[in-house]
Picture 1 (cartoon, helix red, strand yellow):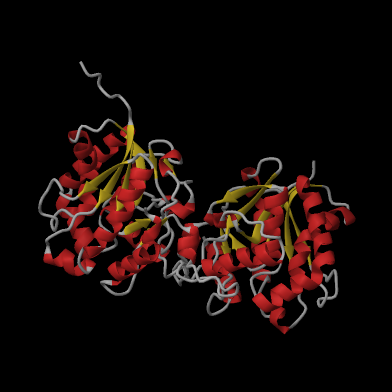
Picture 2 (picture 1 turned 90 degrees about the vertical axis):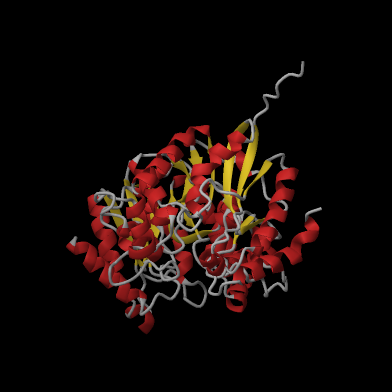
Length: 271
Length: 247
């Protein structure tokens, strides 16, 4: 009789749903960028003995009423467990990313119930989101110094209960949340609510993973530049970053174009 | 044991420095020191001819100055004179353990400038030595203790020995004066602890934190009006100080 494999593995839950909703297709300028992202992550996972788990079908098929950004939290444990994977930690990452071929194994850096990155790139946008939901959360005094991004998180089984409660909260308050999300506040989807609940439930979030694991707003912070004074044309984001988030660009379609250009520049490093 | 010291360099030497409104920074730190049983020490005199040494380098003279003035001290916080501190900032000295050098990463802002500073000084001054980019700190807020006295003395000697090269790099490449040198010395001779962004909020316009609603005062403790904040650092120092006074 074959012995059961009890080895725990780390899982990369890669969010790559190609919604068929015309609104979302228009908003994202299509989903071709996911094909570029996938190539880099599949390769990195194989190199680091991590299970690549593509999240391509959500529990609720209507992704207009229930955005994938919400549903990823409701589906992550269900889908990984349904696949019979004996997991240790799970990383949830947006498909709008590319990973550097030499990116360190970030599961080694993650600590506690949940590891994430603070989001401070645009305090105006963040504070408008937080202030917009304040009454909904009965005037809770939210600490802006603890606001995190939902784009990349690593957690273990102990975070499951929080996500169950998040799902319950979402469906219990669906109409109110949609009103705030789509009409009144319009500053993100899951992120403000996720952040409020983290603070209300006093969840300890570890935020000291290496900053190179989350380079965002590449344009705003001049990551596309290079050291022209030394004649080195390698863009800084490639030289110093390990995970690149392609967000915050002015034109729809920029994301795919920039991801594809990056990939063309670096693909030979991926075996 | 002496008091904790907050050290500022506030030298008025030309028309530009007269109009900077640094007095608001001084007032804000004076108030914070009073509340936290610390002593504010302000250097307002030139130590060298300005052609020989820019006042930014005077940060390295704090131990000499305190001892020359027979001031007993414990820990030292250096702050730039274009900063305003929130009156309710927790006691920052408590974040520092013995021997630790504390500062805030300079990755919050234009990384183009930071990375050129790191790479250019690495190549031209520090023989290829380098370190992780996110450990490159802004030298506008720094915490020292007595263990850093030899390091600052070494920096002074380094300046005297390499002054021509340093001035040439500063002039030709424009990627920092004391700051890059501080960074390399701390990496080589001390133990760096990075503090959160709240303790040196740089480049506030890029982060869209600044506006008439004083949003920046909700997001952190030390507001650093650098990186060409419009209409001027002085404007925002005065506005921020007066706003916080009324709270």
